[in-house]
Amino acid sequence: MPAKTYSEKDVLAAIAEHKSGAKIVVLVARYKIPYRSLRRLINMEKKCKQKKRSSPPPVLGNAVGKYLRDWVIGMQRKAFPPTHDILTNKGKRMYAALYGPARDAGTIGRGWCDRFFKRFPDLAIRNAQLIKWARNGVEYDAVVSFFGRCAREENAGSSRIFSLDETDCVRNLQTRKVIAVVGSKNVWSQNVEPGFHLTMVACVSADSFVVPPAFIVPGKRLNRDVLDACNISGATNTTSEAGFMTTYIMREYIAAFALAVSLPIKRPLILVLGGESSHMDASIDAEAATYGVRLVHLPPNASHLYQPLDVAVFPAVKTILKGQMYSFMIATGKAAMTKKEAVQLASTAWRMRIEEKPENIVAGFDEAGIWPLSLPMVIRRLKNVKENDSKAQQPVLS
Image (cartoon, rainbow, N blue to C red):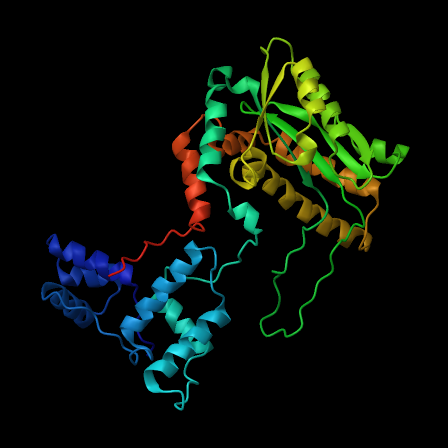
């Protein structure tokens, strides 16, 4: 007869109901817990006794295990989260320090790691997003200064506050996580690898108004088939030497942006954008002033924190692009695409996740703390990145 199993949650619920007057027989039928087991657990609760482990004691002991858990959390907060191998090696060194280097440390391995994670369920293996040191060096004073610049424009209203940013559409979308048969030793996959850089420029307002995008492809001129591939009304298709934003294109897009916003909306328009070199030039400032646009630059290296498009819009666009590129590869059997095909896919993704999803835009402004303007939200996002988004309680050092 198979052993009866029950969850810790059911046990706690049954004990709580028993304290309220419920009979054990009723609780046994309700939670499928054996009568003798439930009675024993209730008596242990009355005597304030803890349930003993059914397995052997931890190899390194409870105190060392808790120290390792606190060490992992501390390293994550310092932006140095350890890997599976680093944790195992540290466990082996601690084992050698406790029992001597001559003693066999073979008990510290993959099985020990699995048991360690079961004992501390607040820890788990996660995919770390690699960021450069500069992006993790956002300073508090710069953030407060940025908030002050936004606060001066608070009376502008959501229809006058815009965010502008650009992203690479067709590169760096590969993933290493796939679904495969258990036990497969060699799992490989193909990816579409365009040999060029395609930049999408997007501009949206806090009340979800969408300005037609711009697509920048590398080269000197555009062929007719590339122009026809973009079926978005009012969109701009242009070129640069490498397919990136330039000062000239930025000036042209600011003019197009100002003309796309209807005149009943009062000027100046507030445009929040990053501090890239292509965004900061005297000619750009002059062009913006001509069209009644006031530029508010984000703090250095902080686009991933306070750029609404980066926070909630572009991730959704790239999710759609991944699916489209996968379908393109299956349908055509090609591992590369032309500029026409890339612009076509990017246009579809833009329409599906920007034009047809205004809630993503509103959520981006709200989460970034730009609209509604919220200093607590701005500081919270900075605090999360400084602590590496660690939700676990910080251990108290004695």
